[in-house]
Length: 602
Image (cartoon, rainbow, N blue to C red):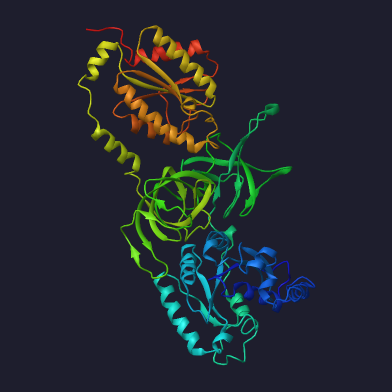
């Protein structure tokens, strides 16, 4: 027997239709392995006697009074026991159809699963639905427990019938069960020992099957993945460090390792691994919440994935094919914006296309529906507002699984199946429709230039200090207006009251405002104006969106700050030390040099 310090640990989820006996199975496992707290069994039996209720092993787990009163497990409960081989964390996931959300959250943490089917009731709708969800969540180790065999006279014929029916179903959804075990959790048959009541079964007991599950490879041995949670910058007492913080999902890393951040593809080298309040350390491993300083002061955002240069990179795209399960009462509809949480990244996402919807009861597929109903399993095309970094769920769990949020509520979840090309997006489709639907003015751009004495231009100012950018932009507008040029200024933070310059907390609203800003720029530049706008801390994807929306007109990018952006090249850089007047004169000169402001006319 392994020493307690060396024994491995495994997460097991137990699922199945409501009232098929999951909690009873767990109660038996706890009792038969002597894993109950001292006196717990007697306490529960006394409670049942005092309330004139027959004792059930399920009550060992369903300890909350409201759960006992309803007789159903509402939330995912966790309990612990051990065999001679390993420690187990058993997650009891609710089987009632109303609590599938809780079941999924519990199952997502599991390495293997036990699926319980009532021998008397047989395979039910949720039996199939849960089987399909195990496949979706990438849980490859599944054993089916055919429970309540005492209610069918321990019939081998009934067991074989359920085994045949459910095996056929699992094959169609891509799951290969490791085995079927006939049990009676109430009587303890085939839980810890083989039952004399079913001599025809000579396979593994439930406890033996648990020990037969294979432990996944240690996360520390996998390629390195760390979703960036945040970036902290110190300013006090001359400390100019920028800390990249997050929890390492897989792998290990040490000082001096070259790394790349995705999806920005920015590169640097690990300079130090901080270990507050202790001294810095040389290595960090999977599971550790860590903070790093980098050799190069690159600008990255929360949600990126840090990867060692020697490890395979994640996938990066706006579009991907996924399997998802929808749980909200409101259907998921094509074209509507939702929020996706994948790793540490949160992003707006839209359902572009439904490839098929699977009826998990009949296995029938529908390919013409425009919405996904509650409890539907669907294969879909999702598109985010900016490229995401992710992995296939079959290779990396945490960076390949996602949840979907609608109206501040988790409404669905799924796994990434395939990265798709983002050469054609909903934005590009929108622009095509927009341009084809316009009836353009008969006044030409050349006529407007001659009349206004300047060319149309979208002048965009950006920098870390948004207030400084706003002051410079307003000063420039005043100068151009005073010189009788048609000009209009709009700061992004003015477009919706209360929008913060903090891109992390306000990213969804800001991305929506970028779209509106680009649409407005397209109209104002088409009207021949000089349109001035400010956006706090642009990145290359923001620039690309604005350029697409403003086309065929061009943008003059003005960066305010001593440090140039590292993911796009501005047309002009204004030092921090400049005053508003100095900035205005420099930009004014730039507009003349680029022949936007015309001094001579034929």
